[in-house]
Each structure stands twice: as C-alpha cells, then as structure tokens.
Amino acid sequence: MTWPGPAAVLPRVGVDLVPLSRIPQLLEPQSGPALHRMLTPEERRLSDEAGAAGRLAAKEAVFKLFGAIGEPVPWLATEILPGAGGRPHVRLTGRAARLAEQAGLGPIDISISHDGGWAIAVAAATTAVPPHTPNPADERETP
Image (cartoon, rainbow, N blue to C red; front, side):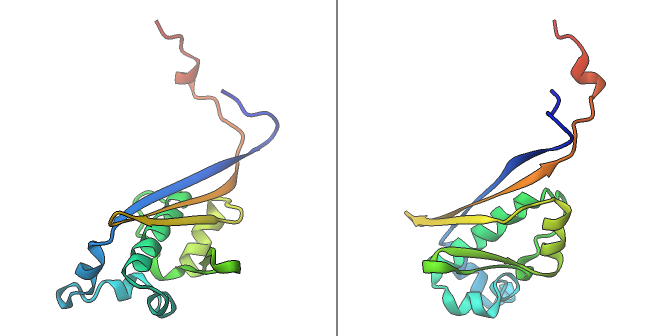
C-alpha cells in the first residue's frame, strides 16, 4: 500500500485501563509512595481515588501515542489537568514534549471515564506519516 502524495495525516489513538483498587497500593509506604513519582503535586491535589486512576490511565494512553516502545513513561512531564469547562487537558513538558515532537503529533485530545471500579482513558492525535517505503515482502504474491 502506498500513500497519496509526499505524506499523509493519520490519526493515532492510545487507550489504557486502570483499576481503582490500584491507587491505595500506590500510596502504601513500601511503594515509596509511587503515586508521588507518577502524579504532579497539582494533579494529586485535584484527585480523589477515581481521579488519580483516570489520570494514570490518561498518561499511559498519551504515552502510547508517542510510539516510544521500550522507553519509560515520562510520568511527571505529562500532566492531565482540567481545561475549559472541566474537560481534561494534556500538558506536555520536557521529555514528553520531545517524544510528542519526534512522533510528529498534533494537539492531543483526551477522554477519561470511571465506572464499576475502573478508569479508562482514550487519547487521540494526528501525525504526519512519511511516504511509504515499499517493503519487498509486501510485493510477494500470496498463495
């Protein structure tokens, strides 16, 4: 398959699911507490248990947009804060901003929902995809 023209703009989607039961575990003394390494002070101030789970799911969903397989999640450089009308807004700084730029991402939209002990988040953005370089395996006929 080849792309029309020099480049195409395609959607990218990331999704993640977090059980609300995970949050108390992240606050336990033996975890460090891990939540302080994953949520900024502002995010922690704004979050109850469901909000924290939703923000963690959102950060993972955003990270999946970067396509940075094998890289650690830039937890504190990805913030999920209230935007206009309370709708979640993504703010990227430092390493997260660099990964988004390397991936060629446009503005990121995020949606978070909580139900039945779970939080889910979906992140979406567009990316400019370089022209397709034909792979010889693509050209082989299949029996």
